[in-house]
Length: 317
Image 1 (cartoon, rainbow, N blue to C red):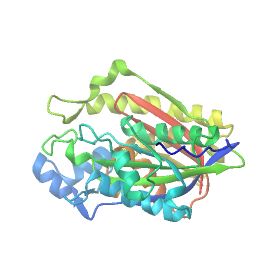
Image 2: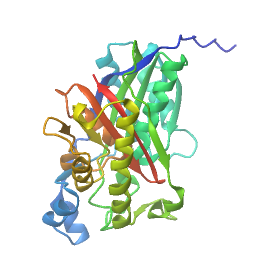
Image 3: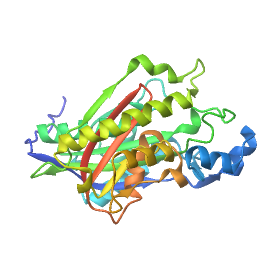
Image 4: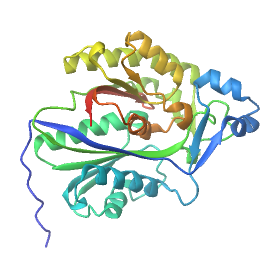
């Protein structure tokens, strides 16, 4: 007989209770990558701002990294795993055919009665999943939600591809979303442009291929616009921000967007990409965890394959 699920009362708002990150043990500098793609450290830094990235070892699989980040987030929130109503995993690099990542993560976390599902929106996956978690808590379908962004991008890239080999890294980031007396996760502004999906796609062998210049032009046009709309939806201006935490795709995109938004010197701009690379759906929570002393409103923006994008303003815990 199926045990009845606990009923939750809806809340006026939700909030990010805690943030955590897992970074693989192995750090790979530009020289190693450059030797394979016939490039240089200087060329890579100029092109994307990356100095190094993390690469997962065989024992650091997608589930292992997701569980490590999720466990730390649960501990930081001070809750029991049995209090978790849902586990959401945002990922684009899971190669399993039948079992999604989230049920395995929920089981390993001890959240054995939680709903569990993967959300595939590529590098926009974290803000998409955060909007989902917010709706679950506010609507009463969940009490606490563990949201993990986890990627082993090295499983889906060609290490000899000059367009992608130097960009991506592996890792996981996680947050716990819980109830709040007032909204601390602002309205999501999101969308997608499937007509341009060919510029960032998988080939016949499941390897990620990217038309870099086209993606760069799209991102530098779309990201500032969706960022402004998220600020408007939250009812604040760029001057009110404490932090800007975009998907860590390319330091040039981050810098261009910060300039377009006219962010003041008081706004901390996340540049985790410099030493972590592009970790896909994990990049926003990892970058958030790398700003431990920052509190107040932060603008999150995710964008990537699909082409999908999403943004919202949140209050940092």
